[in-house]
Length: 247
Image 1 (spheres, one colour):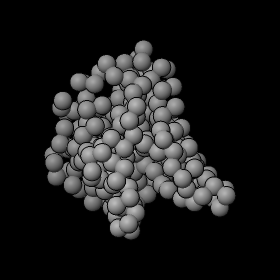
Image 2: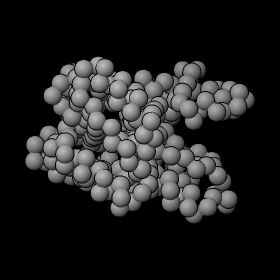
Image 3: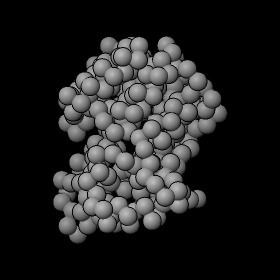
């Protein structure tokens, strides 16, 4: 399953799931383009990946900055020359019940979680088409499949990523480019670490496996979908939720 000689672009790579995906792909021997607005944490991730013997470049960009982000990511991809693997992982939350949700909170979540994935993918796909090879993985969420009160914006963005993935899979299959999504459940990250004990207990009661997932759990799923072993898988949503959501 080695990715030696490949280049993997990961958004939201500075911490949490994105950082773990970067480390896993460095272990596979892939060179890396790491994108995040959190430049200090991003540089730490870059160093950790480089210590594993691969070339890793930090690309400090804010995915919510519209045209400035679009220009920046296009330039980073142009300098790299090619991208073999793309992981659209970046995401933000701005939670509130619908009747209290501000329009700017709706628009910011859709911009970072969904529109930025469109921008990056559109920039990468021509290179993949020319090479007649590519792997795209979009990090969605189980709430994009099942909904969650107080997260109408986040659920809409993650459900949108699944529809986006299905469209990509159909458009790009003839060029040997696969597109899949991963739907994590409750994962131990800095966001979930802030949950009160009572809320954590309530959440865990809904998970048949009885524990929170780890960023590594998600990264291992991404590792597989980017590998040659997954060459006949496209348009699929890999549910990594400990049984929280079942189909």
